[in-house]
Amino acid sequence: MKCLGRKYWAVCSIASLLMVLSVSAYACSCDEPTDTKSAVRSADIVFSGTVKSIGEQPSKLELYGSFPFIRYSDTSNAGRVTFAVKEVWKGDLAADINIVDSIVCGYGFKEGDDYLVYANMTSEYGFVTGMCRRNRLLSAAKRDVAELGSGRLPVGAKLLTFSATVLALVVILALGSFLVWWVAIRKSSDLDREKT
Image 1 (cartoon, rainbow, N blue to C red):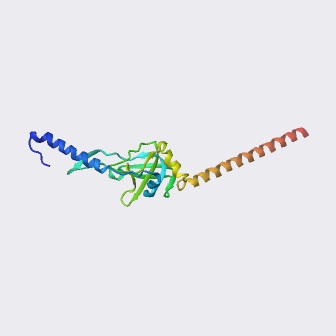
Image 2: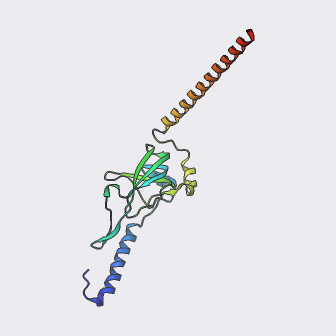
Image 3: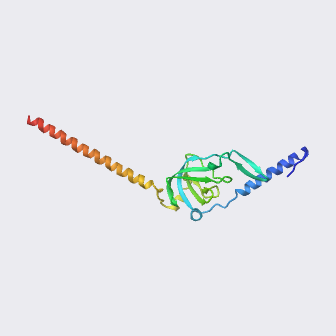
């Protein structure tokens, strides 16, 4: 749209703003799954986790023709959210996972908060999610978690649990052995004193 003269400046500004708002509103219009079962069926992975870190946030919104786009200075980390996975209901996940929060219609995760996350795999970005998924703060997802039932630990977490159990048993056995040895030495020295 070409705007000439001061007379048309206000009209052009308002028209441009309306175009940006209508494109943005349309881009983020979505039909979120209304129930947990539908959300699980449409997702590739479902898990709960804590946000460990969030990649670069948009530096500014720009227009390309009449379409808005978000400018990042480093697109390799744009919108990436790293989660410490706590429980998994769908998919095989490691203890940490990176997910791209949709650039235009992102959910808006906050570092340190716990979430129930539904995401899909893409060939270009890996796992992606956004506001059109059934993502929730874990504290607000009690109904979903109840419907999902008990999940499982992320891959590798079982080994850590097993290792911690084995380590605890070794420490207990070592302390028990030391205690038996110490008592035996004390009794032996007490018997030697009684003989003399």
